[in-house]
Every structure is written in C-alpha cells, then in structure tokens.
Length: 393
Image 1: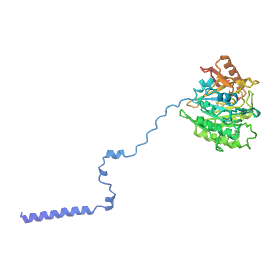
Image 2 (image 1 turned 180 degrees about the vertical axis):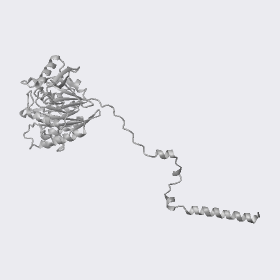
Image 3 (image 1 turned 45 degrees about the vertical axis):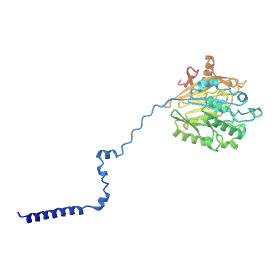
Image 4 (image 1 turned 60 degrees about the vertical axis):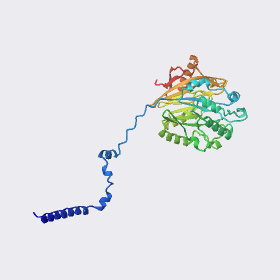
C-alpha cells in the first residue's frame, strides 16, 4: 500500500473520531451540568454518605428510682409574747431545740406562723386586743430549726396591720424561708409555694377561715391573705394537681379548745381532697384533734400548739404532736405522729411511755369523730413517733 493511501486512511479516521467527540460534547444538558454537585462531593465514600443520614433518637436513659419524701408538719408557732422577749434578750435562744431530732430528718418541715415578725420597739404583744408580734430575728430561728416553709394565712396575720404583715414577709425572705397564703402582690396569695426536693415537685397552699380585725370581705387584707372560701383556691389547686407530684393544703380554722372538729373544717377538707389534695394540715383550735382519711389520704384537723403558751383551763394546749408523712415513690403515704409536751411555751419530744400512750388514747378517741374511718395506732419508733393507719375494723 502506498504512503498516500495510508495517510488518506489516517486522516479519515481522525475526522471520524473528532466528529464522535463533538457529538458527545453537544449532547450534554447545560441545566443538568449546573445542578451537578461539585466534583469533590462525588468523591465522598459511600460509608460517609450513609453516616450523614439522621440516626434515630436514642432511647431516654432510665431514671433512677425516686427516693421517699419525708414531710413533717407542726401547728401554731407564736414568736411573740414571752418567747419574743426571750428572742430579744438572748441571741443564743432556740425555741425549737426540743423537737430538732424530728425536724432535722425531714425533707420538708412546715408550721403555721401565728405571729407577725416586725420591729415594734421591743413590744411583743398587745393584751388589750390579743395581738402578737415577734422580732424579725424570729425568721432566722425558723430557718435554723429548720423549717422549709410556713403559712402566714391565719387570724393574727394583720395583728400589727399592713406594716407588720409586710415586715413579716421581708423577714422571712431575708432568712430564706418560703411562705404560703400571703403576698405583697394583690391576688398572688392563692398561688402555691412550690418546693423541689429529691426529684419531687411539691405545691403547698395555705388559707384561713378566721379573721381577727373584723369582716374579711371588706378588709384591705383580702388582697394579700388567702381566704378559704375563695373560688380561686380550688381553681389553683386543680391546676397544680396536673403539674406537681404532691399537693398539700394548710387550713386555719375551726373552734378553739375543743377535741372534735367542727363542721366547717370537715366540709373544707373534703372539698380540697376531692379536688386532688394529698393531705390537709390544719391548725387554730390550739389543741390537737383527730386524724381523718379521704380515700387513704390523711387529714389532720388540728395539729395543736407548737410554740405557744399553755392555757391553764385546757391541758391539751400543752400537749401535741408533729405529723410525719412519708410519701413513697408509688404515691403511697406512711403516716406517723411524734408527740411532744410544751413547757414555758416550748415543745420537747415526749419519749416517756406514759406521755406517749396519753397521746395515743387521745388520738384514737378524737379520730372517731373526724371521719367514717377511724385511726389505728401501731408501733413506736426510736424517736417516739407512732404509725397511724385507717382503722379497717
């Protein structure tokens, strides 16, 4: 074959190859080219692409079992009168030392503060109108007791008028003691104190059914102190029931110095229990009253005096008990009473068997009037507290 022929064949072959390449170039879609990701993306290994896919959310870690919560509740605390004078004289005075063994083991300790805390130039009572006031330093004693929350909703809240009431709130705030049943802001007195302890959320309400300065409905304090019959209480209680583990209600009312609860406290207790309260903690009669039960939940109709002067005509003003409620993780509640005797207005745990049995007999008798279900008393523990259960018989 001649060189011309070979050259001609090579030229034809080159033209054919060039034509094919041109056709391929022309067949590309410009829009598709622009949508194609950068070349480095196509170089991502398939394993890396797989890892970019959102993984399913991990299962929530199991929560540790909730520990039991111990609540200790006491009755009326009056830091005025002679106790107030001792507070003014002696910085080391401690009105709660006699019950500290029980208080110190509580996750939440509660009492009703029956006296304002306000500097009144050394005055701690006005006998002409049966008014009490304690020094502001009393708030620090409550904190060291320790009490974790108190009620300020009672008939003595306004004994030293608006100033005394607001001074009380200031003193408690300064000592770090939360309070329920009263507020500076009008209307906020019906909001509960919320305590978060050991994983429990506890809402505590406080109200009064008694008012010393006259009719409550037209009194200026109605905007600052919680009244038991106000519909805002049940509204707030039902709302709290949906968002908190425990709901407690402190009630100040009833008749003084009588063993059996009056009808008004009985009706009130049933209404708040039906709305979802886990326990009612009541005071004002100045003597202990029986323990009632609502579907297995306890109602303490009167916890009696705690730090208070004894009345010479009523011996049970000098005897009482701390209520100890142990809420279990499954919401069961174990109830106990820790008896004490009051000497010179100060409580001391009753560890003598005779004194304990006196309280046992009293509670059994008084509880038969408190509800259709009586109260049985079981074993005594090392602190002198005895178990209370609904009487099945």
